[in-house]
Image (cartoon, rainbow, N blue to C red):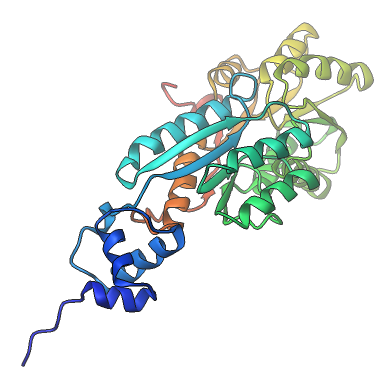
Length: 345
């Protein structure tokens, strides 16, 4: 019997539909090969189990443009997300990845669309946290025709994106509704929702699912308004005061986005911090302290740190770089209350 012949570069070239020279350049990391051909060669080489450390093979730096809000002016979620991208940069250094973060100049759709288009000019892939608006979706769609795009935290399902990484926002809204209904009790009463921007699909989904659970299971609880902070943490104190001026019997507040501290200041000033149920998102030093004080009743937490790393991993998988971790694209939700806070934050 003859020993089975080891696969060669010629075999890889035939399987990938490229020339021998192209295979040689890819497997020896010499560059000068398009992304599409590189991916085909690496996929064929792995399928044939060619005797080579393919996990270390990279032709050139993979440039990932990341478009998100500036953590200095937005929710602490974005600070954790940025830290996650910094970790991904270091963790995937072997695969020659460059993560370049671009922050929104403002929240206007025209401006955001320009930022997306500009960030894509010198990129091989994009990760974006953006709200749903025709101009924004159109900009992302144009980018997605040229390179893989991954949406994080809030999806843009009609943009042609490669994948969405984040929590199930409808599930988060349903959980918040369940908690609110149980905390407020049988007597019910008026409740408001404070969204960041309802054009963020994630915020709209949370709001809609929250309302649905209350209508179906806790009909005595009435959502009397959804107001927008426009992702400005400073505005939530004013919004809360305005809500009590209009609805003096307000029983609950579901804060979908930023500004828990502003809501808390208003509740304390109005002497309503222990009569009003407050549910928010993201376990931060501020929300942790408010839970301990008893001002907040529950916090729904996700893991932006993990989301950032997972989003980069999805891009690497698209280009056949690295070994898939098998982690889900959907982020699990944790519920924190006063009695189950981690010992340290």
